Length: 172
Figure 1 (cartoon, rainbow, N blue to C red):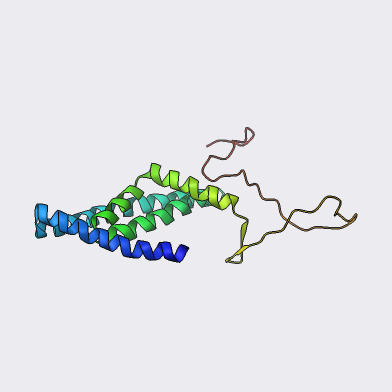
Figure 2: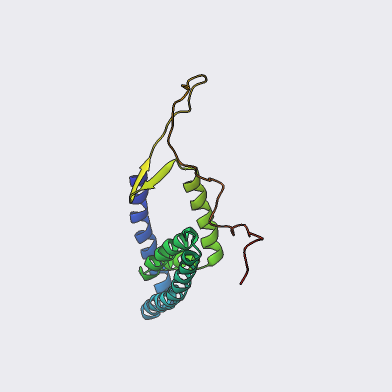
């Protein structure tokens, strides 16, 4: 299913871009069309550079606080996708790339990705992504004295909200 979707994307996007090039070229001419593509790429890359450095600074500040910069990583991945789209010649890819430069849209997409990841029964151990499903125990299936090892995961914790403020902690 996913392969068919990716194949459709890899066929549909270039065909759409070619159609848009033909339409725009017939309206404003060849050289203006090429200039527009180059100008959008230059503007996009400069905006991407600025936002990428700001995201990197936020990630470093979060690490300095002793927290994982999950939100900055998601923003960084979306900025990476935006950069790839902005460097790909075309008006459709430029439009999507510029849209991903809007922080509010990245936040919305990041929340959706986080919700999907939070609900997934998956773990990352030693750089390996693993999923596992264990059926719930049947009623009366527990053996007294049996030890079950595990770890607690707070599924309600979200990197997209501020951590609670400790009233006893000194403020800067």
